Image (cartoon, rainbow, N blue to C red; front, top):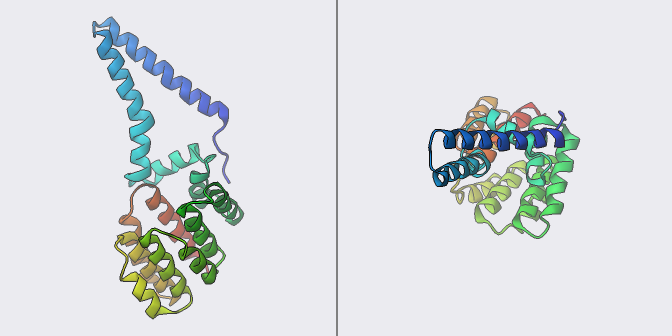
Length: 218
C-alpha cells in the first residue's frame, strides 16, 4: 500500500489549524470585532473543519478524490482501513483490514456485514449466507442473501430477496453482479455505474473500488 500519513504529518496539520485560528482571532480583534463574537466565529470554524466537513465526506460527498484523501488520513482507524485497502492496497491488505474490522466490532451487525464481505472476497457463498442470517438490518440481510444466491445461480431465490431491497445502490449492485456472472459486461458497467451514482460518501467510495476490482476479476 501507499505510505500512510505519519504522526508528524498529523501534528503539523493540527498545529496549522491552531496557528490559523489564532491568527484569525487576533486579526478580528485588531479590527474591533467584540471578543465574544471572535470566540464564537473561531469555534464555528473549528467545528466546520473538524465535525461538519468530515460528516459531509463520510455521508454526503460525491467526490471520490476527496473521500480518498480523508480515508488516507484516517486509515489507521479500523473502520477506514478496509476502504483504504480497497482503494490503495492489494488482496492481502484487504483481507487483513476486513478481519481487523470484524475483531473490533465482534458483537455488532458490523461484524457480520464485514464477515459477509470477507466471504465475498474469498468467493464463498455459504459463508456469505452464514453471516447474512445473523444480520439484524433487513436491507443488508436481503442484500447478502441475494448476493450469495446469484453466486450460486439460485436466481429465483436471489430475486425473492432482491424484491425486498429498498436501497437503490444495493439493487443495482446485485444486477451488476448477475450481469458479470453471465458475461454481459455492457450491462455490468451500466448497473455498476448506477450503483455507484446512487450512493454517497464512504459507500460511494467503496462501491467505486469494489466494482473496479470486480470488473478486473476473472
